Image 1 (spheres, rainbow, N blue to C red):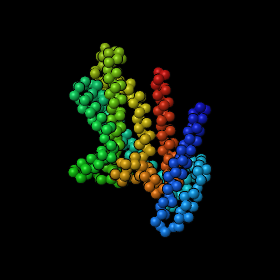
Image 2: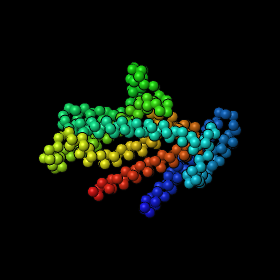
Image 3: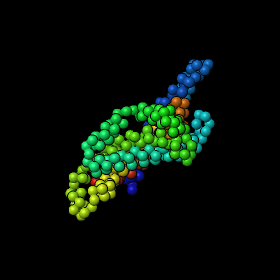
Image 4: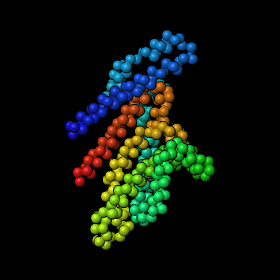
Length: 295
């Protein structure tokens, strides 16, 4: 417990240092917003040099330690702003991770069960195609097909409780989860199908379907869950491109606004949120991996 606490303190300090560097470098450019505004050059230069790095670091430490991020450039409370974005982000992340992980595990187990090389090659080709295609291209293709061509799904936006607004961005994000988890599930499933464990269950009279979709699934799922948690942490941190394409009001869209508007307080808070989410879920995944290695 003490060791984990020390890890968190070190992480917290490094995160504060990184956030202060990013926000300080990025918001120094704010002076360029006034170049064509008629403000005197001396005043612009004074604005650029108004905050030293030391002051920016102390402000970051104060904000992170007391969770006081003040207000955005538009005058909105930063904490309230992020709270409004968390629920849509969680819903989108859950949809994407469930869609990607369930379909990939089922596809991998189906390949193990049927042992049809053509079926396996099709899914492997699809996974490679997804991983080699930029996610904004996948998003645009989904938008063109399901909205413009079929007209069955909304083009974007968000409505609380309406799953239709989660489908297109969720599939776009979940497709990459599908590709990564499929590789892992297929590899682990093929190892188990050739193991003594599989032959032992066969001698006990269990059907091939029950062995593959129940016992082998139970064996590979703890390992697969580690990678699902890592993917989930990245999804909870927001996806700028997907959220911009589908104008989804999540964390990623706020991060894009913070960078574009040079909003130091909002940028600092969003980086802190992303860092903490990533730390918690990756540490959880690492603990699970350690327990699995000890078994």
